[in-house]
Length: 129
Image (cartoon, rainbow, N blue to C red):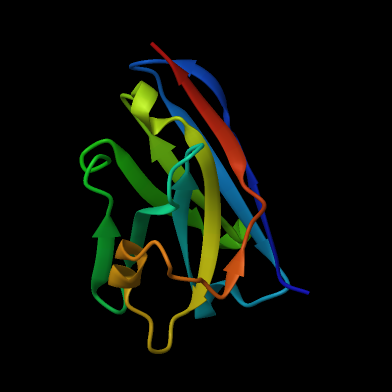
């Protein structure tokens, strides 16, 4: 059974940092791209960050460029979203998602209707002003 376990959310002041983790199980980590979405109350889900270094595609939400970065530790089947200089507008529930690499393009994240192959349960990030 494929599972994605997101963690690391919390309450932080504006200007602060958080690192979200997404631990995957039940699938071969190298065969998938792990990215992040978020959804704030009353708003559509939006893609945050996706990087496919082998496929050569990437997607960054407009408001996160220069502040958020992705990394991974394959030995732990875990991907990370480092979020710096957080703003109140970053307040949302953050979801990690996994997509098979074959035929995948990170630019799919630009569509609010895009459905990844697998989803985590989300972790709440709240940024106070």
